[in-house]
Length: 159
Length: 465
Image (cartoon, rainbow over all chains, first blue to last red; front, side, top):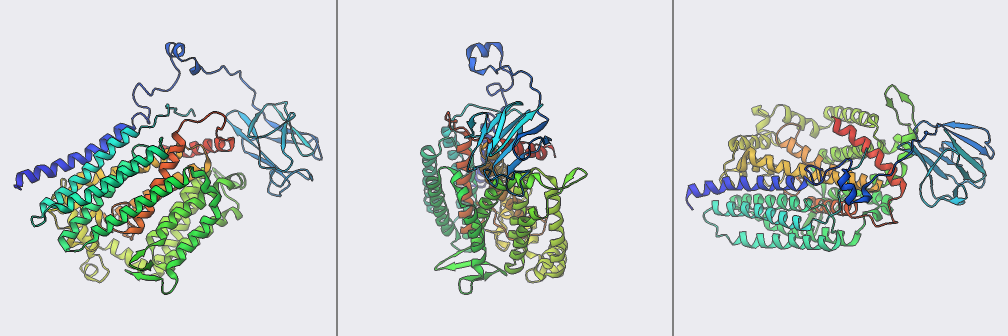
């Protein structure tokens, strides 16, 4: 093969490998939300008319809960300030709130913040965690005033 | 922070297109290698390329069946890197009269088959979480295997190999996967405990002493690997992996600082007292000293690599036209230097960009994943790939001391190829699970949702830098 052709091939190889790099980058555009088709942010009125499911429900302003009060149980009357850190309930000594209660499990439940709300989640306890009368099957948001029951202890969020 | 939601689309056709393009790159590399050496008819080219193309398309079809929503660019990039590596190994073979490339092709086939089996057998990465402690046990066994007399062999001063019949394996390569699984499983269960406890010292929240225990164990493990197996590269890899995973899990900068202090302390002590580490440092700092250049185990290798890359310049000498075979281990540790000589800075930057894109897709899969375990696993696995690239490419270019880690997918060596292909199949699975449409009702549980806020805040901290 003559040298000129070979040199052209070699340059062509460099072009080809960069072509691969650029096509990969180009195909990621959509994922990086560049360009009009993958636009994010608020949908326009016309888009809303076409796709009503895009409308975000109006959320009334909520007052963030600032403390957790124990309403019933051995610790009744005490209150725990909420400072944006998750709180764990249970009999285990490493729990944030140690419950001296035969009906509570070692690591019973967990209260954690997300956005402006607090969520309660059962950590696989034996006797379950209740919000109102409903036993938790998955993490659930709690509002101030709702009663959370863990064993003999009843807790309430205060705004 | 609002998450960017794009409608779930499989994008397998795009993947097919990119796979074909990647095969073109590999094929062109093979063709150039073959046509630059006059005496070889190009049968090697057709055989190797058709095997490679067949394997790649098989994986692509498997993805269409088992992981329809997997990330479309991970597979093409991997295939491009793997075939470039094969072409360069073939090129060194032609110059030296060895037959490493046939072996490498065989290992590629084995690796792709095992990666496909992983893809088919696991389907949902979350079941790996059940094997958290088994993974820890497996890692320890894998790391200890080379020390068993009769089974382990010492090659180039490092005792990291085992010999089984005609194959020699580096079990430590697989340990990086099992360790990632263990760290991901352990941290996704115990993150809260580690997060909640601890005293505040200014802006830093210090971890409790007993939460430090796993960290200390990881540190001792790395030091153990360094002392007993004399393998500096793997020691850096394992400890780096642990620091990154705990940082991603907790978003606490204090862990990184403590880890960095431990690295400095360990590094200083090792540099002063351990012969092989001292020599590495010496070779790195005074590479051009004639005495060190001529010493056995001296800087000849790295300096020849630098000369080669300097010879390549911007455009390179062209594939098959340079003399990368003058460098010892030109087809494994120094393969980036070989590429630097033959395709120049322009080509090597493209290769490094391919690595970066691959790692960024892995981290994207971590961001999109709905569960803590998947997030941590994807982040850990992609970081493993990244750290390997930094350690070896930085070593070859004399940015940091050269240590023997394999250049992912390119360097000759079966165990590394196998381990990295398994990593790719796990990343594909995680990205499939994070991108596929969520079927109603079986949404992610909220433990996972709470983890996503932590991860977003930690990634924010990363992107700020």
